[in-house]
Amino acid sequence: MTLSMHAASVPVIQQMLGSLAEILARTEAHATQRKIDPDAYLQARLFPDMFALLRQVQIACDFAKGISARLADVDVPVYDDSERSFADLQALIAKTLAFIGGLEPALFEGAQDREIVLRPGTPKERRFAGGDYLVRYGLPQFFFHVTTAYAILRSNGVEIGKRDYMGQY
Image (cartoon, rainbow, N blue to C red; front, side, top):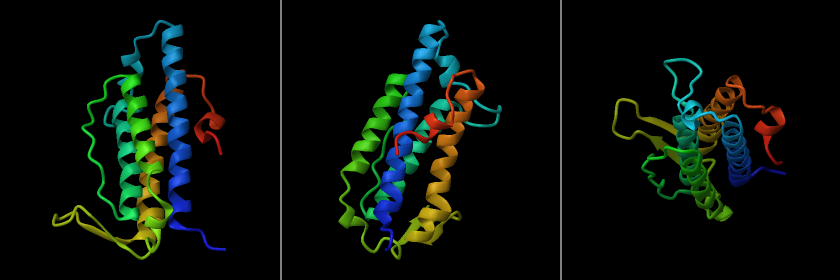
């Protein structure tokens, strides 16, 4: 049995974005219950030179839509990254999930060999075969930002654990 590029990407991304949405909902409830300003969490970071939670979620969504679009050989949607609240982040995740969910598995046929070009025409241009792009670049980047968002919240006292990170599978 072979694993399709769709099966290796879309369900994994959907699972992790679903868990991220749930973690954010729990964080918002935690802040409300304890009368903590939501910005304390939205602007929290693990270290001063790292992005804050808000940006980690935006970048995770950027990778989610980018991976899926590139493998399906469709245009990557452009979002304006204007989110400023938990509600905005939930809407961003929902919009990203709707985009990914609307990509038919047939679009991913041949994606393992399709050339993926990142930052074309720049000194940072990178070329990958689709399979390498997924497992060596796209998913590791996506997981980094989801994991960092989780770690920011956990390190700031939100009562979440590995089960919450893993989400529904």
